[in-house]
Length: 110
Image (cartoon, rainbow, N blue to C red; front, side, top):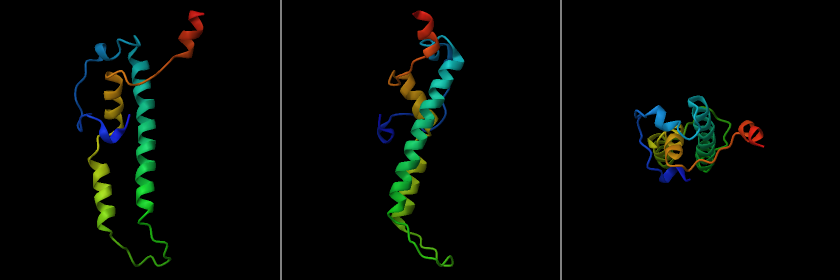
């Protein structure tokens, strides 16, 4: 799922934990799944931001000169306004868009 096109809320909302952990049957497993997905989204967002900001990088050795590029500021503001990775991951989990498996449970089933 593309994090730029998500309909996740930009602020924290209250969720029903019993409904949220109904799929796994364990609150801690659900939180671990959402946390791992949030880490993946966070890394992807960071890489995209760094890639876009590298276009504006200047390789001068003079530290006294600091250039403020308007486009660079707008890109940074855009990424600041996006929902946080944890909120995106929680929304994806609620919508059933996160694939997960537990090898320990699969091992016991065989």
